[in-house]
Image: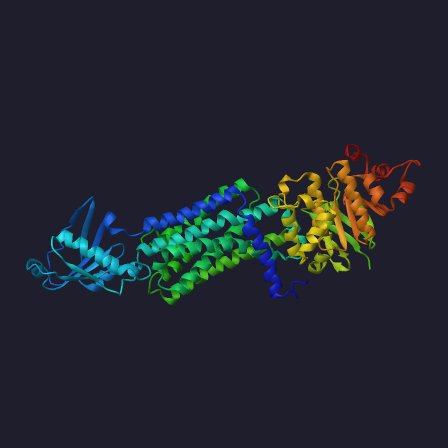
Length: 363
Length: 248
């Protein structure tokens, strides 16, 4: 059973034995179950608040009046508190850059006002954000109906198949959605994994594992596997609900795996350092505040320079930016490499610290 | 080959010497008693011999494998019954053993066999948190025996148990030795050591005070012909021990 002679299959089997035990064991304490329910509820809640339901709230329309049309200068009140607000820009390019949180981009064709006056049914070219690309026909019908009502005569809104994809670094729904994945994954993993380590130490079952044929690394990776399982559960839920935001699936999956690994590293570290359940629950809060809350501002450039510098090196902010890059276009190679290096570097360091801490117990 | 061979073993903790230059050996198939008061260095020695702790100096081997350099080779050959009942309380007895069986690559049928051997087959599906102390101790022994170790370390195996369960465990230990297993036993109970062990070592303040058969120790160090192992123990390790010895 020399560790150097142990085959990869044996190592993987050992990791699986510990991991599968912990996957089941993690569900047994009531507190863990409550945490899992809370995270799943947060997943659905974030999805719900970030969902775009234009005619429930208000419709923001970026307008390109090609011929100087005056039809869309004033806001239109649809009643029930629903207001259509218009933001004129001078070109389609400017409209693409300005879409952000707006619901619709609209190009008003030459002769639109005259066609309206003549009682014809003019056609407007519409653009929607990329995450709405799967329901273009539904949106066409909805906008056509509502604008016809608002203008008092029929108009047709033809939404372009080529939807608007934001550039990396702009502040739109994608920044919030990317942060959302970092948050729920971290919260899920930190709610489970440190307690797996803690329970093992508290009940001294760790000693039984250490005298078994398992190596320290296999024990740590087994715990990580259990955490990864729950990270995958929450990740699958997130991708199911938010798949429409993803532009680059390869990068999205890579970013998610890095988010899960980083969360696992921090959780294992917490479980190795803190030997008391109440203290662990208490310490989870400042750790989450320090690591996760700032990541919400990962894309925000208008912050104090000190905070900006912190965000540049904060691994959760780097992970949030990486995820954001998979929901947008135009990230530069240097930015991508920098964020990858920060995320991977911190994760490797943290895992090394965990193995060192457990190994140190025999010194 | 010696089952256990310890040479000049020393272990310090932050300037405190827990084990102080001890040497001894244990023959294969022997029940060896390692006796001493709390804090004497018994558990530290067990932790070193089972590869959980590195010695500060000296060396030790179990079944020929060095406990520091070759501990991965050593692990499948040893079974440990810890002083603390370190079981997964939310799992059933059977689940605890099945998990251990997977760690040691032992067939599932062996789980049923050892459960039967320690008399827990009919309670195997109950969660361990509902077990009595005695049942937990029997389950610990079952776990340690699962992979048929060559050397079994028993750290206070009868502590806190009622006399019936303690007697049953002693009987099992004797059986295992008869089957050829080497047993390294620490206990507070001198009578238990006297009954079970071929040889005993007294450890106090990290040093071995005496090592021999219980009969020879009584002859060499007893004050009268009726001297017990406990009398010898108290004489060799100091009067400060009498209070716990009587208490036990």
